[in-house]
Image (cartoon, rainbow, N blue to C red; front, side, top):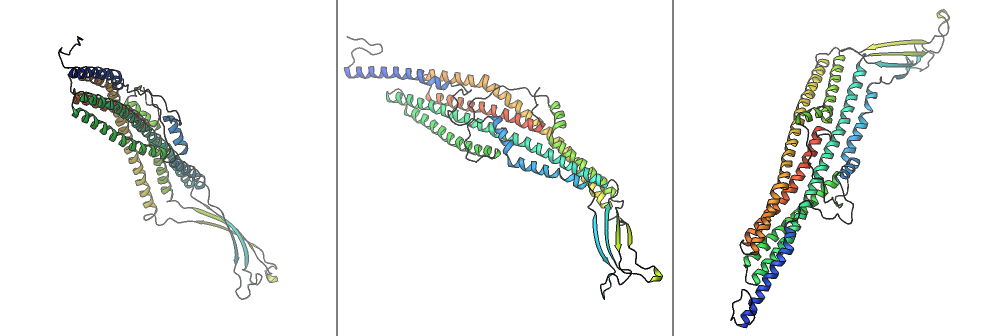
Length: 459
């Protein structure tokens, strides 16, 4: 008689054959679990998958370069700056001289130029001269306005680069989230197959199969949502790069995960004071407002106008008066009289004084805002950096070990299927938080560089 371990002797042949079949099914099931499942459960979060075969990969630097060279809003600000640069020389130049042609004292009965001795055909030229210093102040104010516009271009460029970086990293996170969803989908399909097999051989529960299918459906829903969010992010990034909204974007699958140490906040404050375009722009506005205040005070003084005219006369005087009529030369000098100073010049001085105060307060406000932005970005970076290290070195390795332990326990019926599923779902969420922490850290660095005004934000 053949003796098989675990099967009592004396069993009827039909029952014996069924138990042999079940034993072999269990053995095949456990071998399949050990061979196929751990490779998926222990998949690394560093996403070492191969690069896409087709399509150009858009790196962060490539996205920035394209946006800076093609963004229409930045081009608009540059055109405005170029236009304002043409104004100072216009403001600092004297008004155009005035040429005059006059027919003076024509007799209305004959319109004959030689009839009356007062008649003359006159040509003249006159020139207005603002009070000394006014033109220089007008030119200086316009020059400061142009310089402020130049800093506006730099500030717009900083904001654009910051937006591109943040959008690029958000898109990178969505790609990694989709990869994580797909790997967990494959794992749950294996779980469904395992639970189905155990149920068929009478060693499992149907609710285990239904639970795994439910979790798989949740992942499918999550994938649909992530794909929609990714497409919206692609549209935003394409707009920043002035590309068609439906242009396909492929990002690299691996990036540097090194976390640099940023400089102390006080050092970053000082750097921002020296280089942040927003602050320099406001300082130029203060200088322009000061020049306009000085100009308003100069308006208490009059402007001048000088001219010369030559009058040609025709006809002859009586012989007693010398014969032919001589031509006439006229010299002119005029000055405006600022007699409404209380209602005009003084009011203008008050206006310009308030404008100067306004710009000074604006500088104080922007300095406080810049410092707050630096502190906030630095705090966000430190938090994301610490979270990233915690997920990478502590939480995720422990979650992997938990899944492996749960899987081993499930295979010998010491752990129920619900706990195995829960442990895998927990690992899945930690994987997403891992990539979220990396993304937020790099977005905080982008925000910090924009707040300081330069890329030199490290120790």
